[in-house]
Length: 374
Length: 248
Image 1 (cartoon, helix red, strand yellow):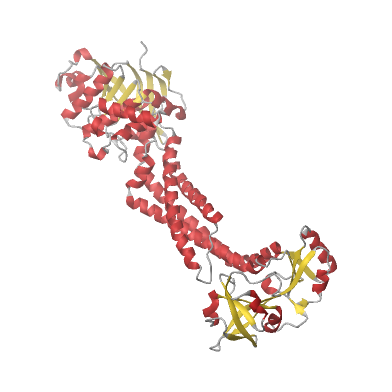
Image 2 (cartoon, chains in turn blue, orange):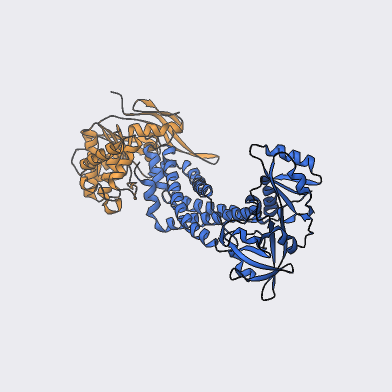
C-alpha cells in the first residue's frame, strides 16, 4: 500500500503535534496515576510482602497491619508446637512518637523483630548491618525520612516513646503509605517504644516447614491456638492493601484520575483523527469511487491511529520514565513494572484505534458520488 | 458485438422528504468498446447522474444497466466497488489526486487496490506515467504539477486498473484550451487505439470534434444524438455541433 496513512498524518504538522500531545499527556497521566496506585499498594503491604512469613497470626478481626491488637506472647510456644511450623517469631508493628532534636514530634511506625531471625528484617540496607540492631536502643530508618525525622547521620540519638533511640543504619526505598515512617528495631526495644507489656506481642509470623501444606498448617494453628486469626501473607497483604486503597478512598482517587487520563486522551485523539479524516474526506471518497472496499479505507485510518499510538507511546514513556525516576526521591513512589509498561502500549493502541472508530463511522457513510460534485 | 455499457429505460429518482426529483427518465444508451462518446447538456440535466450510474457509483431506481455484460441494477451496494475496480476507470474534473502522494504513488494506489505487488506496481506505474508523457515526474507531488500534468496523472491512474471503460467528468474544465485538447486527444487514443469505451461528460465545445458520438441530455432524457459523420474530426468548430445539438 502506498504510504497514504503516513503522508496524511505527517502532512499537517500542527495537527500531528496536537494529536501526539494528547496521546503523550494521556500516557503520562495514566502512567503516573497507575504508577502511584502500584506504589501505594506496594507501600501499604510492604511490611507483609517482605516479611518472609507464610502465615500471620493476629488477634481476632484485625483489619490491616497497622491495626494490630496485643495478645499474650505465650501463644508463641503453642504455635511452635504445631506440626509443620518451621519457624515462628513475634513481631510488633505499631505507631508511636519520635522526638526530634528541635523538640518537634513525628509519628513513626515501630517494627520490632527478633534480630537473629530472618523473618521481618529490614531490607535494602544502605548503611549499617541488621546485627547492629542487637545493641540496646538501636534503630534503622529509611533515608527518605532523614529530614522529616531530623536525622543526618548514623550514631545520632533521639527519643522514641520517651525512650532513648540511636540510629545505627539506613534503608533505601522502604516507604510507608501513611505519613509515619517505619523505624526498625529489636523486639525488646519495640516493646519499650510502644509501651507494650513485656509478655505481649502484636503478631506472630510463621514459616512452614518445607513440603508442609500451608493451608493444613493454618487449620492446625486455628485448632490449637485460641482467640486468634491465622492469615496467609497474601491474604493479610490483600486485606491491608484493600483497606488503605479502597476503604479510605485513596486508591479510588488515583484510579479515577487514571481513567480521566484515558478519557482525555481518547477525546483528543478522536477529535484530531476525525479532523484529519474530514480534511481528507474527498480523497477517501475518491478511493471508494476507484473501487476500494470500505476495509481498505479503514486500514488507512487505522494505520494513522496505530502510527499515532506508537509515536505517542514512545514519547509518553520517555517523559514517564523521567517522572518515575524523579519520584524515587520523594515520599510517594511512582512504580512502573515491566508488565505495566507493556500494558500501556496496548492501552494506548486501543485508545487510538477506538478513537479512530469515530472517523470510520463517518467514512462508511461517504457517498462516492461526491467525487463528481465540483 | 455486446456494448461495453448498455442502458435501457433507466430512471433515477432522488428522494427528498415526501416528494422526489426525477433525474433520469427512461434513458436508452449503448457505449461500444473503441468509442469516444460525449455527454452534453445543461447543468442539472442528469448527465452526471447518468455517468455515476454507468460507473456503478449510484444505484438506479429502475431500468437496466449492463456493464461489461453484467446487470448492475439491483446489485447490493457492497458489490459495486469490486465491479468498479474491475471494469471502470475514472477521470475527474478536479483531478482528485492524493496530494500527499507523488504522481507515481497515485498510480500505484490503483494497482495496490488491484492486488499488485509493490515491485510490480512501481514498474507499471513508471510505464503508465511514461505513456502519458510524465516519466520524469514519478516523484513529483501534485502540487508541483500543472493542471494538464495532473490530469495526465489521473488518466494514468485510471488506466492502471486496465479497465475496459473510462468515464470522465468534465476532464478539460479546469484546463486551458491547448492542454484540454491534449487531454482529449489522449482520451481519443484510449478509445480508438486501445479499444476502451470512453464516456466524457463535457461542456467544452472545443473538444466535441473528437467525439464519435455526442449525446445531449435534457431534463433527464436523451434529447439528441449526433454521430461522428456530422462532427468532422479535427475541426475546431463551435457552431456546427452546438447548432446541430441546439446548444446555441
